[in-house]
Length: 309
Image (cartoon, rainbow, N blue to C red; front, side):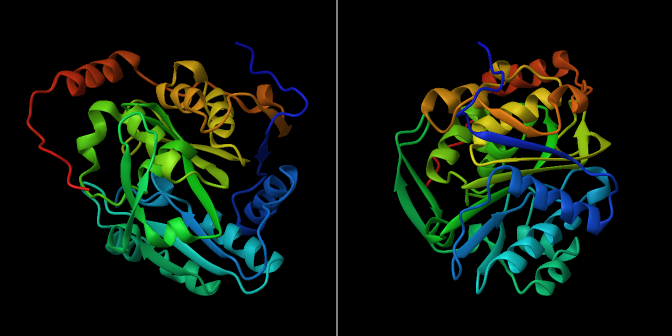
């Protein structure tokens, strides 16, 4: 299959930041948005931004959303739109309390500066959404997220032990409000696809200012200073480009391929900004270790019980 750029395909922007300072990052975020022809937000809208806090590790490790990138995105929204209600959100995970980690990692000072609020999706009122999913036919999601006028997925450019890569699509898996998401790891690709059917973002921005490589991602991998931003309105196209930047074949990434087949988005794209060949590299990744873990998850016999949605 040929994923080369063709006219009429969804635009995916690649922007290289010259310096990691806030001013340079703001220029980069602005350029990404301009290259994909803006966001389509209206004044007075409610905008929800899903960030990535998967551990109590600082942003220098590449594990979590860089506060500088979040700051730049919030600044852009406040400068270009009036009277937005901006909500920055994350949910609890198996070993993560989103509310505490958000506070301990220093995010409140960023959102307070731009008059935004924080929402723990796991503690919000939940609503049921019927979907034609690969794993679920019904899923509960945050009511606030479901009712937001515009949904932005602020993801990280990282490797992942089970899925090889994590980007915009994987970030929505983290928006599932159920804490014990580890129960979904036996069919993680399908759960990621279903999360995006239920909570498809309007715009995805991948933070690769400090990326992460090695099979120990998405938490304990090696930080990689790329000073790179990738963004687009089609999460599948955006992750397809991100996978290529990381040196992976997108069709061999299960959740990207399955999301495309399910109609979440397309693996076709038009790259705008930096040329792909000028920024792509081979991320370190041990496929043997990764495959061994995937086999272990597939054949594990531990009884997890029924998930009570």
